[in-house]
Image 1 (tube, rainbow, N blue to C red):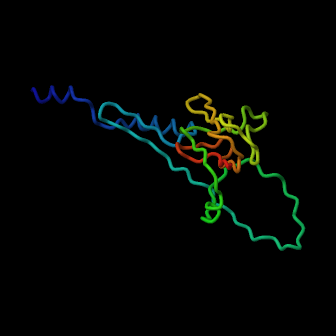
Image 2: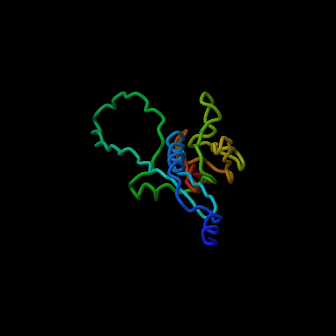
Length: 169
């Protein structure tokens, strides 16, 4: 009898399938990629893998061909180049994300971007904002410099430590 009583007083280590389903529904309804819940010694982590669309590569047009007029592409999240030489060629200081969230390059959809490649920035100037838990967090320039490249797209989810902006001297 004493053994049964002790087991009843110990925290439950059984997995609640309903809780797992609720967590999965939260992932589907939001832009989160993972969620974790801890109750006593029981820890449940639900994550989903986001796969990028395949990158289409086109052959270069001959030098004598006139450039074709194409509609402006829609703003899409940028991806890391697959060619290591391209990665090495981007020298400068990376401004990295201090948190998980969603990046916004401007204060509102109709506003101008905070910065663009080629802009000179001062230490403390807002480069972009990251929304995390319904809070807008300005990401500021760590030093004076020139924006060499913006490595993320507008409304793109980012992870902690992900490179956001490339600054040059």
